[in-house]
Image (cartoon, rainbow, N blue to C red; front, side):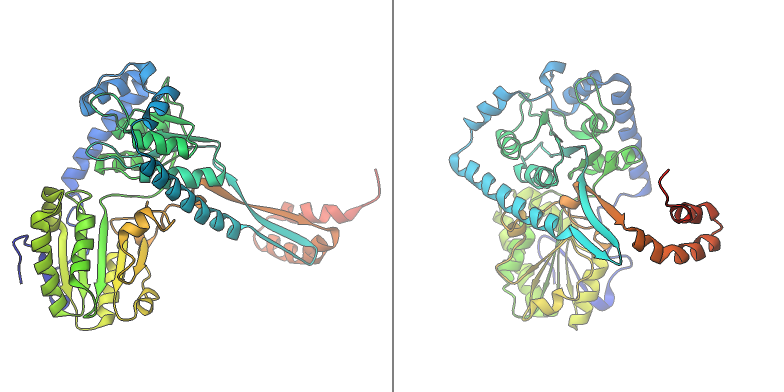
Length: 439
């Protein structure tokens, strides 16, 4: 069962060893080489500041900027509005509002207060002081990524939100990104991309002041840079090449499965698109649809390369196998197109986002559902969640006890402090009851 794309087709009973490890996972030699290159750039930025940013921007982005031109001006943002359509502005505002509404709900649900036996406890959120949002550029512009990273920070109350994005060869930032930054209330935007942007956000330069946390997706060099600076500044999550995994049975529409796989493949040549199904007929039909659609698809070269290198179809005998394989893979996006999708969704333990039924494509979660599309990839869905307002705040417990509340626990504290050989901990409690007369 092969198409001209040579999409990999396996039976679940004959999967190759470690099939779930992404083919694009770097081998040791390649990883070491990338790490060394990234370290060199980071060190140069630390040592030379703005001069290094200018040097690497000219090298990688083919544009030479002066230090005073690194930061986007109010005039440039105003000009950006003149080059985008009203429909685009409205779409960005709608996305911003939907994301804001959902993130506020998360905030509200995390505020907990309880009072019992004389002790009151609250769980409150305190915003991080400053955040750097990395927005990829280059071949495409991603204003949606700016919204997904900046809006949760704004909802959390972060007072300083900084955006870095690669400039074009003309030394400008895509106008949609600038308009999105303005709509979201971003404080600073810099024409800096790649590893040098991560280094500037982490350690600061003459122009770019360092931040407390860096968020946002990027290529393998940006991801490596985030990992390396994470010893000094917080980062969000490893977000690499995009992924989709479709779980489907005989009721699924093969054309919809195929078009959804292609929609993710167009992200980049290293994007991952897979189907796991209990229907051999569906597998065959999807393979046929992929071949036909990819042949004439826009961004066809990227789509065909991604599907050929990182596309796969797995057929299973039972639904249980399908679910188990999905949980092993831990996809960024999992679409469930089955007779009873919720029954399967309840059994998915590792995924960035779960989309149910034929009217819930990944495109919906990317642009219209209000949920965040910065999600864990590369199997990190086993331990990470998607980006949210909680990534931009610290949870703090606030405790207040009455005299009676502490007295009730006095002996309990004594038992445990003695068990841990921390006698002064108990004395700190006991002292409050020794002599309560005014001094």
